[in-house]
Every structure is written in structure tokens, then in C-alpha cells.
Length: 345
Image (cartoon, helix red, strand yellow):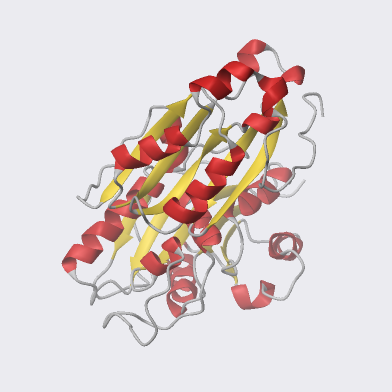
């Protein structure tokens, strides 16, 4: 049986700083092998391709620079599927301060406008960028020297809210410099690093704050009326009526599908609802949520007004009294779902 290969994964947008950091980290740690993003970019599954390469190397410590389009849960899950052979011990996420805010929000600046500190880079989708930040063990901020102090303070607090357990590092004269890291252990398949998970678990304790950065938990036992929820998402939350929602996630219920708990997953301009469990398959103590249990993280959030708007999208007293049989006949403009997985699948 071969010796396990200790993995440090370097993620983030496709920038020179990501490649430079991977190389400098390998030299500092004495890791003889660096697998570059260029070697993986055109493979069907870059993680599996990297593992295939690792199976043919005698090294026991490797740095892998991953292409910028990979979702962090896929990275973690694929390495975990290979058991103890390839333990993923760190995820270092490069955060480009010059582009992070428009990337995370999905809001393009007006035509012809560019902040004087902005740097042209290939774009990442908001969903990918958020996932890589949320699951990182270390966040390395680069291209921050020309960013105004107020913007930089806001950005640092924002990424700390998204990933409150991650170490945040920055180097003024060495953007590819190496952050000190303490004892690390392999990433398990199940992760509780994201800030939204900490909010729902009542364990949210970011150590960086900024007046513009807000986070809160929304709970409501009544299901959403799908028509009113769609209008709220498109006409108000999506247009910034209550501030800029960078991330919202958690568990929700729709009146027309009230027997199903769904995952609410919102980054930038995109939101999805994925059925997770059918009440009929669960014991009472296994229920994920009775109604809504959501976390919101964003900029300049008008929490009171957003809470009131979310409440208005749930069933009224009269509607609630009508019961689930009547609810099923409400117009439902949201996309249909595949059946939720059975509890014993």
C-alpha cells in the first residue's frame, strides 16, 4: 500500500498570482510536485485527472493549482471519495481584491466605467467564487494595494462573513507570498465552514466587521406563496431594493409543495431550490425545517424591510387556515422539481 499523498489545493480566479503562489508554497514546504491548472484545464474532470497523475508519482506532499471554474464542494467530495490515499489538508483561495466585489455580487459596472484600481482578469461566476471562499482554509488577498481603504475594509469583512473560520492573509510587497498555517487535518466530505451554515447553527462569530457588511438569520414557520416569492426575488431582492444580497442559503418550503424541504441556494443574480427530503420519509426529529430557515449575508442590507418583505411572501392567516389541500392548487411559476431522494437511498 502506498504512502498517502498530502494535498494542498490552490483555487481562485485564473490569475498569475494563483500560479505564483502554488509554486512558492511548494518551494517553502519542500513539496517536489506542483500540478498546474494548465495541465488540468482541458480534462473532463480536473480532480480525477490530478489523482491519476498522483498515482504515478512517488511524492507524498503535493500542491495542486486548480482551474478557476471548479466548485469547492466537488473538489472536497472527490478527494474524500478516494479515502485516505489522497487527503486534502488545505484549500488556499486567491481573492483578487480588484475584482472580488463585482464577481461576488454578479453586478457589472456601468458601461465605460472602471474603478481606477480594477485589473482585467478572466471572470469567475459568483456561485463558483463564493463556494471557493466559503470552503477555504486560507484566503490570500492579492491586488489590494491600490484599493481604497474603505473598500478594502468592506471586502475583508465580507469574505470573513462568508468564511469565518478561514485565515485571511495579505502581503503588500509579495502578493504571491506564503501565509503561515498551523496544524491541519484532512477535509471530511461534510463541511460546516461556510458562514451561512454557522448562522443557522448559531455559531456565527466573524472577527472582522464593517458598517456596510451585514448578516442575519430569517426564520418563519409558514410556507412561501410561490407567486409572491417569485415577485419578491425578481422585483425587489434581485434589484437591490433591500441592499446587495451577496449570499443567502438555507432551507425553505413552498405552499404548493409543502411536504418537501428544499435547499435555498442564492449567489449573485442566481437562485435555485433543490428538494432535499420528503416529510413522509422522515421521523419527526429528522425534519430539516418546519418552514423557512435562511441566512442572508450582504452589503447595506435593510434587514427590517427585507424581513417584512419575506414575511409578506409567506401565507396570510386566511391562506394558512385553508390547509395543504388548497395550497396545492395555487399558481406556481417556479421551476418544477425532480422527486426528492428517498430517506433510505
